Image 1 (cartoon, rainbow, N blue to C red):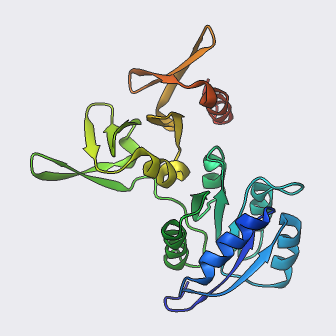
Image 2 (tube, helix red, strand yellow; image 1 turned 90 degrees about the vertical axis):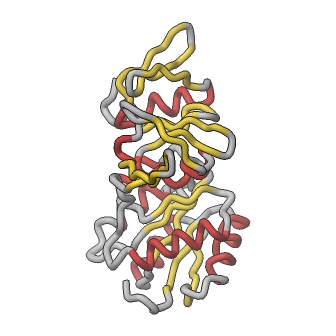
Image 3 (spheres, rainbow, N blue to C red; image 1 turned 180 degrees about the vertical axis):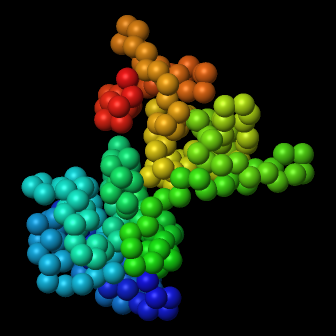
Length: 243
């Protein structure tokens, strides 16, 4: 996508307050020229068949045609528009990543987070961009900055306003809250299993159930899964062929 050219975007959400909020925030962005809105995926598809847009900001859970289903349809367009998912649910991040979403923004939407999504659209080129799997995370230890490959991180542990990254053979403390990592790394396969833990699905080796209690084995460490996250995690793992 050409630098400097202002964007024409479409926002699709069946909930009017959320639709209006995202549209309002996008209209405040100097990189946006025009914001179209639709309150259903079906209407959005009709609009996209008649109008070219630079990006679609798309809710996931909608009656009838869902956001994921619409994204699948759009992927078959001759020139698919980039898609940014905007949702209150973090459980669809893997599916979104598989559909090559530019970004995955969680509600309630913050202006700075939406601005970051716009930046990714602007810098992503004409084709839909994917979240980098092997991006490097700078970590400091003893006055020396090292770069850790995100793909090597097996799980993340919350420590106040910090997060500890655990690899197979070491751990690193970074000054980023786990909530921010959950949002940023969701498209790369990281999911919350507990309020203080994120795991990389690719590193989960076992799922254990004992008396209704669920744990997972990641990088040789057994981690507890909260009840609220158990079913979601098992479904994600089974869908990826992990048993």
